[in-house]
Amino acid sequence: DFLSLSEENFFVLNSASFIQDSEVPFHVANLDDLHQKHIRWLRTLPRVKPFYAVKCNSTPAVIRMLSTLGTGFDCASKGEIELVLSLGVTPEKIIFAHTTKPQSHIKYASTRGVDMMTFDCEEELLKISACHTRAKLVLRIAVDDSKSAIRLSQKFGTKLSVVKKLLERCKELDLEVIGVSFHVGSGCTDSLAYRQAIEDARHVFDTVLLGFQMRLLDIGGGFPGNEGFQIQFDEFSKVINEALDEFFPADSGVQVIAEPGRYYVDSAFTLAVNVFAKKVVMDDVTRIRGVYNVDGVFGSLNCLINDPVVESGEKRYRSIIWGPTCDSLDRVTATYWMPEVQVGDWLLIDNMGAYTVCCSSDFNGFEKAHIYPVLSAQTWSMFNFSYFSDKFM
Ligand code: PLP
Picture 1: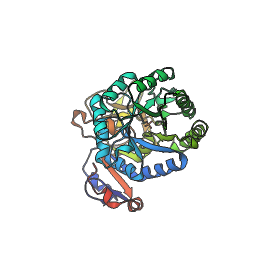
Picture 2 (picture 1 turned 45 degrees about the vertical axis):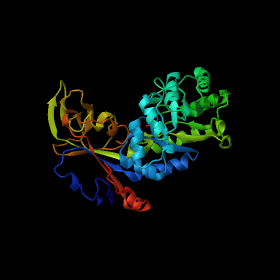
Picture 3 (picture 1 turned 120 degrees about the vertical axis):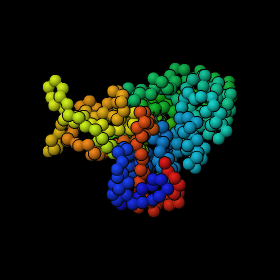
Picture 4 (picture 1 turned 90 degrees about the vertical axis):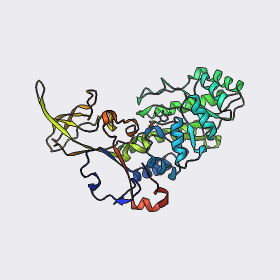
């Protein structure tokens, strides 16, 4: 039994009745999954406080659930800060973790008491000094992200060689620096990237001889979050815990935080897409059995389906999956081996919580996927019922 939290009503989601006659794609967002992930995080990385990266999926039900569980939030813009504050999060639980911010966003953070923010260059310091003198600054360093699916250190982070100069500039501008942050890249595959980055951060702490009270280490995101996340997450955590004990022991007085995005939401969302069109075509050599129209790259399937073919007794056909729009760029996958499906069938796609709904558009007038957050009755009763009674979407 799952309780749906959509709209203003609560109802037991016991059949697909709510999608009757609809062809609009939809996500089921399993909030229990967030709860399980959080428990695992607390057990596995006990010294690291998670600040969920809102950019990864800003669905209000996700923010509320994580806020109830007690995480902090990494916001990248005024809009994300506004959203998180509007859902009852307090300013000290927010880090403005974008190194290049429009001045108006910095001003907004200042008026709302969001003081913690990252920077990586002198120009950013000048803006902050003009608009937010109480800011508590976190210096983002560039680290080795060569083993990650999405590399970030080419765009963000300062090189270790210029750290000293930058910190001297902070001193001249009378700005307070409280710590160091890094991000090993999203979809990281190498646990040692964290170890090296933590060691690099230690190096920065050691070179700060300018009277700053450095007290925060932010180890960023990059943690896996799909169904098979556990083995890799445990491996990463072991390396991180050992590196923290070595370079930032518990009695060092340094608070450790992280900015996980993908970790929390990836497996919580399952996308259902309706096959509203089908064609059987021939290419030079093969008969392509299915050419299907579902949600596309302008919708939630902006991260292409890359799953390997799963062996099963079922006959599979080479298929192309197109998105619904008139744009020929809107191809979800060129070759995907799947059982034959018919117009009207629904396809279910797991692990669709990270960087999907937040990047989707209604290009061509195709509605964005709806989101149905659900919660088991057991988890429901564990939390304050009325807390979830506002309109969610
Ligand atoms: N923090 C920052 C500054 C980021 O840019 C990102 C992702 O781009 C994240 C955290 C979240 O990363 P992930 O989803 O890999 O945990």
